Every structure is written in C-alpha cells, then in structure tokens.
Amino acid sequence: MTVSDLPPRLGSLTFHGPFSEDRTRRIVARLADVSPATVLDIGCGWGELLLRVLEAVPGSTGVGLDINAEDLARGRDLAKERGLAERVEFVEESALGTLRGPVDVVLCLGSGQALCDPEQPYDPGVVLRELRRLVRPGGRVLLGEGFWERSPTDEELAAMWPGAHAGDHLGLGPLVDLAIESGFRPAWIESASREEWEEFESGYRHDTELWLATHPDHPLAAETRERVDRQRSSWADGYRNVLGIAYLTLVPVVSA
Ligand SMILES: C[S@@+](CC[C@H](N)C(=O)[O-])C[C@H]1O[C@@H](n2cnc3c(N)ncnc32)[C@H](O)[C@@H]1O
Image (cartoon, rainbow, N blue to C red; front, side, top):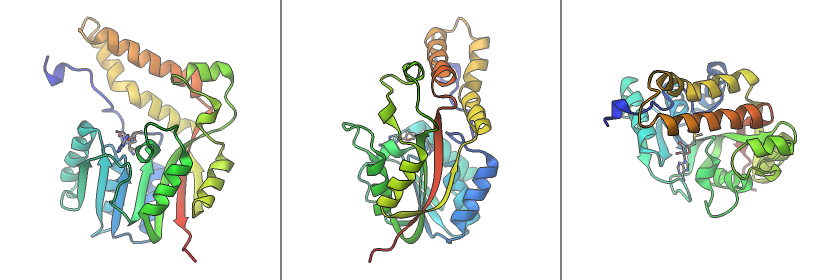
C-alpha cells in the first residue's frame, strides 16, 4: 500500500483546534505588540500560529516542538513556501521539562499535555507553572486550554473520551485564577465560539469522510470508519457546547 492509498488526515484544517482567522489576526497583533525576538511553540503540530507570529514580526525567530514527525514535516514545508525556513526550526522532541526557554513569546495551543508527566493525571497548574518558567519578563504566553462551559451530565461524560470525568477540566473562572496563582496577569481572556468548534470538528474529519465515501472496500475502510464515527459521536453526543477552549494571553508578573 502506498502513502497515497492511505486515508488522508487533517488536510482540511489550518489550525489543529477551534481557531478562526479573525481570532488569529487579533491574537497575532497582540503578541506582535511586544516585538518578540524569540518564539517557542509547545506541541506546535505544523505550527501555523508560530508562522503567523514570525510573519508579523520581521527578524524574529521561532522553535516549534512536537513528537509528531508528519505534522512537523508539514510545518517545514509551510515555512519554506512562506520564505520562513531560515527563521524557524521544527524539532521532533518532547516538550516535557524543555530547556528551550526562556523566550519572549510562548505558544501552547491545545498542547498542555506536552508539559505534563504522562504518568500523572493532567494538571493545568503544572502547565501554567512550566509556561511561567519558559517566558522572559515583559514577554507573553498564549495558552489555549480546555474548560467546562457548564458541568457535564453523566450521559455526556459517558459519550466523551474514555474515562472522561468532571475533574478533567476547570471552569473558566478557576482556570484564570490558577493562571494568576502561577505568576501571570490575564491580558486578554477569550474562548472558542460555537462556529469555530463546528468548523474545527467538521474540518477534522472532512477529507477522511470524502475518502470513505469513495473507498468503501479499501482494506483500511472499516477501521477508519469506526474511528471517525467514534470521534464524531464523542463530540456530537458528548462535549459539544459543554467543553470550551479558553485562549488566555498572559503577562508574567515580574518577581519582587
Ligand atoms: C491538539 S494538537 C495542537 C497542535 C498545535 N498547537 C495547533 O494548535 O495547531 C496537540 C499537539 O501536542 C503534541 N504533543 C503531545 N505530547 C507532546 C510532547 N510531550 N511534546 C511535544 N508535543 C507533544 C501532539 O503531537 C499534537 O501535535
């Protein structure tokens, strides 16, 4: 089987999360305002936001860390196409305990797990303390982090990811409080809209759904169908309108 015979993956997405062009423009402008010389993207995937920040700040340089070789290769291709290859490095490396800071801007978009010990329960407090360690005074952190829009019902939890429970996320208020306890002030607080979620969730499976419709007898069709059906139902029956994504632009408070 050649690579072109395999079901496509994430090709319809610009960002690997519910993140619109409008929001991107506003966030990039806010980060560019501090004229960062160095940018670090934790769990960058193909690093679209990293590339946008570098485009907005001439002369800045960036490093993206991820453990997914395919997404990193996509990032390198995008950087080359946009004339940024000399200013950005996409590195296949775990971000856990990374020594690649401190930098002027740290991006961590839907990738908090990259900073946490996989043997321990997920803890946004660990993520925030790591981000505080990685940012220079006067810099900025952009954190994209899940929160409960409202308490999930047992039925919704049962439809989400395996083992989902109410302790998996905080509400928005406690999440921002935790950022403050971790040494930040929240410069801007926003969250993904319903439209951004629908664009993302549909885009996440779009090219795979088109492939399934034209390859019903392919040797990988049954497992691919099972996977996308499971993903769709965990959103539509589970976390839709319950799980939010907060985008927190955080300023480190200077140490006394
Ligand atoms: C939801 S994706 C977000 C990608 C990107 N930040 C974006 O918004 O387009 C989460 C990413 O975290 C990466 N990741 C998970 N564990 C990691 C680790 N220990 N170190 C670096 N990256 C990791 C995954 O490979 C994945 O690309």
